[in-house]
Length: 451
Image 1 (tube, helix red, strand yellow):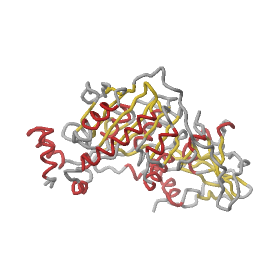
Image 2: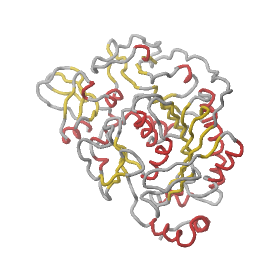
Image 3: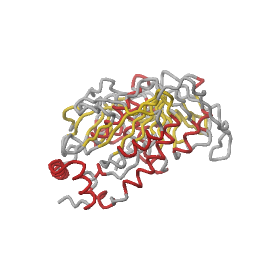
């Protein structure tokens, strides 16, 4: 039995009609649909070099995505933690497909945790341009940052700020903005039945007011001519069409824009409703808006102070002499290197570090190394971003050895050169080891280790 709130049942009957409503109820008793999205940063054609357990046919509306067979557990593979794929709800993949990021563009994911859509954007950017992934809630921002790292993203900045705090730093800055807004979560009722108990008749209105506030700030950060996608994982028209009607009435410079995705109905009016009884997924709402060109618009400006030198935990000023690790071959452009405390970062292209002054920033591009006394130690994030051919030293493990490595065990791999070595499995980077005295010492982060 579905055990849905009476008010919600009445709402869905109104939206779907009698036949559609009963089809929807039947779908709520069906198994949850899952997808795995192959990391295009590692497999640009969306096809893994080696089979991944449990992957079935492709998801037609998202490049590199596959439906996951019921009962399969691909997340147990060491390659999942290596960033080869991201497990994601199939209908949620539509928002980034509609956004259609292009390499070299500046993209904002305004409500980004836990990171599924951000890492999908990053994969489509192919390492070119800039992705700013923002999550206001601190704990969720940490999860977001970890997923950005796991998927080997080099050109992302992760911030944790309310939209009205973020917008003065990026006026008319982004080519595309994704607002996957916090909502009443009606599309989660099959996957998370407990969400049904949190729903009440006033929830859509409360969420809609907050969504309007978020869109107001998002609009300020989109350049003229840019694209904004507004999406939710809910079904009611208060949070979906209602919010869009309110927003476009207040902002006539924004117009809904028709779009289509393979395997789904065409969105002639710029909006697409997805329900679990009509497609393989839990349900989503996605819309696409374009901001009018404004040739007379004032040039972008921002009013922030340059960052002050940070200090490390021992009270010492930044160490600009932190050495670039010699464990990877291609190096980085010197003008993109940035030190903060004991950390050395490679900034995304064309990012002015002054824009981030005053913001809580968890990740500033790719974290390369940390100073440790008189030496530098490569960071785990660098390992996750590297391919084996980019490393000065790498070693290939079997699946069994990879699981042992991710559990924190030292490895005995024979006679190898001493020093930091990139640990790989099926050509996917897992982290660092350090060969010494015939033993590969384990440098996989303790907080990530498997039990």
